Amino acid sequence: MAVTDDLKTVRDYVRHAVSRFNAAGLAFGHGTTTALDEAAFMVLEALRLPVDDLSPWLDARLTREEREHVAALIEARCTTRKPAAYLLGRTYIRGVPFKSDERAIVPRSFIGELLAGELFGGEGFALVDDVESVGRALDLCTGSGCLAILAAMIFPHAQVDAVDISPKALSLARENVAEHAMEDRVSLIEGDLFGPLQGRLYDLIITNPPYVDAEAMASLPQEYRHEPTLAFDGGPDGLDIVRRILTEAPAHLTARGGIICEIGTGKEVLEAEFPHLPFLWLDTEDSEGEVFWLSGRDIGAGKDPRVISRMPR
Picture 1: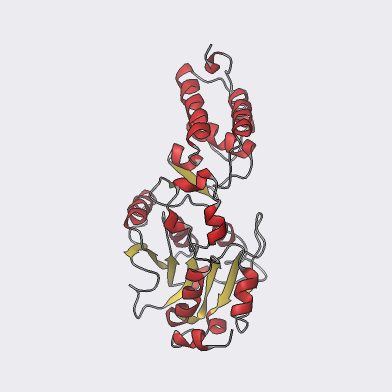
Picture 2: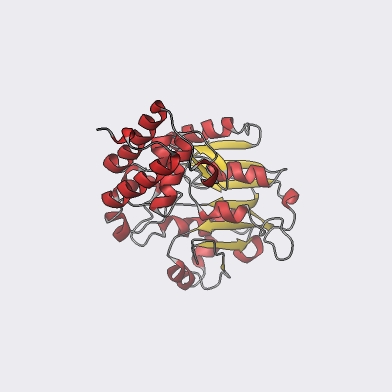
């Protein structure tokens, strides 16, 4: 007897998915952190229902076609170990939908939460007091383009450059930019970090670069191995690209601007190597000390990029 003969409602399929995910020993972390959250997301998105609240739909009955579709997705998640976002072709950051497939890493940066919070244009302490004051922004290692698009939404007058070294990632980013009608606000640029940006200055630099170290790369769960290796590999200690960004960013930041960068677990190493930089560490719901902020003045905006590399470490 097929599983769809016994399972009728959204509640049934969420419960079934949690049981299958736990039995299969799946790894999470692509927008969800538990089997229940993953199950709820997959069932709701598969049925084209709002993914922000499961409760209104728990007792809704599925058609036979819907039951077969949802059951197949749950089974595919267990047997292929592909991230749910790849199986469904879509994921969300702070409620904003983005296309997702193997051309780029699944969108899930902590920076998305921070951009949408009180630190940018909020009352009281803020990194950027007036979101309308940001005229040019840069998203380095843009991947699917999600952070560049969010930046364009949050900073209404900003022109956003989005750079990535991967042509495949940029092709996906182009689809996301078009889906959100941001072609006039977001420019996609192929290249290696600041390489294609000679002479350009920005009020804000956003970057979620590769930062996984060699030891962690060797033990990545199977789910993560479906994503581009280029988007993870940060060298022996995970900070090779972050170091390059810190060295080169001063030449591309305005003095009134700043840089927000996600680095994973390398906080102690980074602080030891750059003791002259007053990193401000920004915590989120699920992270501590994995994202830093530096103002343009603190990082030496406008200086020769070699200045940082000559400073004592």
